[in-house]
Length: 553
Image (cartoon, rainbow, N blue to C red; front, side, top):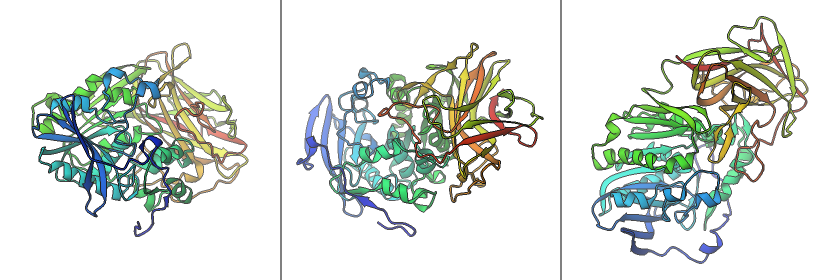
């Protein structure tokens, strides 16, 4: 398939797993647990290609709205979260044997008058055609399935979308196309800008999770997009990567959006950008500090999902009418925090406050530091406990930091023409011990927030950047002169944290991932570094390096 400025590259697929080989799709219908279950239903798309879906709908045949889960993991794929991901927190009693990976559970929704549709997109598993991922072409196919679902004899004409991760990222893309029968979406933690939020954090290549995904997405009996080749060939943000980024301005459908502070390096940024930038007049945001899969399936979370869909897909009056526009958790430590209601995101009353780095005292100061000083760390030290620079700020009163942080950093690479810098924001208790937080779907010792930059990618996009959120262009390399300082504007992903009097914020700066987990544990890794020798950080006087923090009065 060819666009005006690029053509897709394809590869030989992995092929369906052994238990599915030799079993082409055959339509099957059964009744169980009060559901009509239809497997391998063929849906013909506008170009004649057939994809296959599974449909779960009420046995009483009453007209039902549909909830569609669209992703490449396999419509048949029931996941025992507690067995495969034992630390993810999903309780076995919170989902049924009919539940597909990261998808709404038919065991809950069908008895409540909904149809659940799990799809195998074009080119995945046994669906026909060639697979592309989070592309305009995939969005077009998803659009066609929504229109199919909204016009079936058993449908009430309303369609909603739900699901986590890819099943959210695909919601952003199809909502841009405005299918007439799409009545509501529930994006639950999914990236929106594939390049900036997954492939290259701050310009630094992600080398574990992104390369892993083609294996998870690549089950096919035809051909699949060669993401690994495209990634190698396209180091900058070009039309190809632009085609995998959501255009929020086109999204007008009602939306209940759920983000977390915990998916630093994957979903946090894109989900919050979605709420901030979609054109929908009816939209709600919830931000939590928990493990994402566990939170999606918690009974209270599912009840809120139902209140949303009951209102827009069934026309039932529900608690939705009393919801605040924004509901967020202010974290104190792992699985401890309080919920507060707001009217917008980012919070309008935010006081963006600079904390000035002082290399001489390894501290952060409220007032500009007049004396110039510098510190250094070995940038190419990727050991378990690497060399790093640390700056602390101790709070003298209870302070909530909710929103975006930015680090303006004067730095130099002593022995190289480029450098990779990794940032972590941590919370310390009154005894100076690091306070742990949930992180991704399965860690319990994570940071407050993370940031990254490759110095040669430091050029800002003035159209997207704000005083508190720098966005990089990623259009070209601007190499360094060894030893010459440059000013770097580093985006730190959003967070929401309470610091009590006597507790501290710690800024960590180093040349490799601050949070490291042993392979094959699922986590971000950045192992293709440009770092050589020492990095110098300059503070004070001319070099007013500072951390901008979002103080909420």
